[in-house]
Image (cartoon, rainbow, N blue to C red; front, top):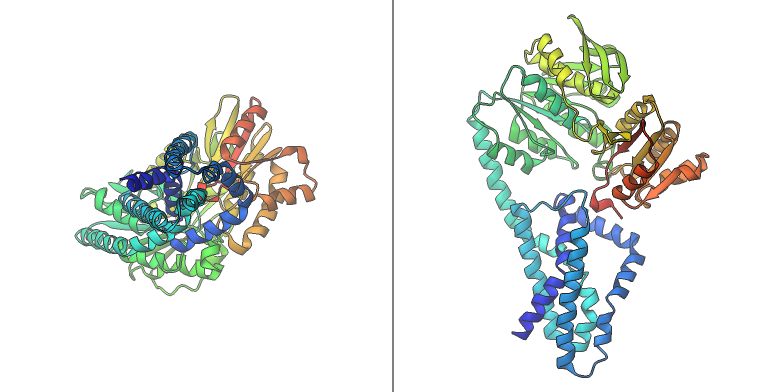
Length: 526
């Protein structure tokens, strides 16, 4: 009984790292390889902090000096519960950017995680003397971060079986809906915005369902089909994301779309794809899997898409702003704090004006993608004009908020170099002092340094105060700003988004504008 009490005490003592390690694995899409890379990077970046934490736990070493084993054992149990309470309370006060979602998969993995950890503690209690066992407690506290790799490997066969069953069930449900028009959207960026806009336009005429939030991977779309797609829906809009070769092909095999939209090809997830050529091939594979009577809508402002050698003879519709030889083009674009107005020219068709509260050239491109698709799917121009004028801001995509004494341009979702450039242009067009909050870019691999250098040179032309989030993550930006002569007093490096917002509220005055460009998931916040 005493050994069981000890094991239970150690599990409670280490419960927060047990939970946090699984949280990071979830943010890395449950991919063990990505989690291992993150863990190694975290250890390298936080060596000093880990050392301080071990010193904080050194009271365990004091217990080793006691001669009375029974007394030391009782004191150890009390110390474990005391630390468990303190660490749990500190964790409760911490605000996570993306909290752990307790899905069925997480619950299964957490159970295995805890059982495996308990087994390690039991083995240690059997093999080590009591003094050595007590001395090892600070190191046992960090054990969950490493042994989660083993727990995830043990869970993988079961998870593959469950995933296979869910996917086959979703395929069966779709197979019974031959009447359902399926529209797939992919791209390095812009796909979520296009999904929301297209849903707004098509809903003027059809019962339309779009995959929610960022449910753009295999299991997200499977869950959407099994739980939310209804018999009354006439059109299914499926967002498709990918950070590895083959994912789009897998998603297309599930959805079997007749309509595809490619928003952009760029260096997003370059770290996992390895090259722009692979990214382009992955995104364009969606078009190449369309049936011969299918339709693809392509962004011809994107040179990579424009020059890609497509291996499909399906119907192609193109859109753009700067490239003029397209089927649908925007011109005479004007921005203000109230939104955007522009003209749309349809090849061999009519020309009509649109107004929207959405801001930025990238949002005009997103609108063009949705407009092109809506026209092809039979939505009248009048209905499109009305729907565009009523479109709400898309959450965290240049969404405008009145913060009392200043205005906030919230572009926090998944920033990329081109979108960040457009957002800076919008910020520069606003009256008042300009603030920029950013952690830079993620998942750009070897392109990261050059992208951050270019970003720094652009932001110094548009922002009066720059608040960088994450010292390590933004080092190249800060170094470039200083080398280019940007005043050091106007560069502020913060440890978290919360700290940056506290500083922003202290500095901003009435009528000022602040842009938050990208957020920093907890997995990268070190």
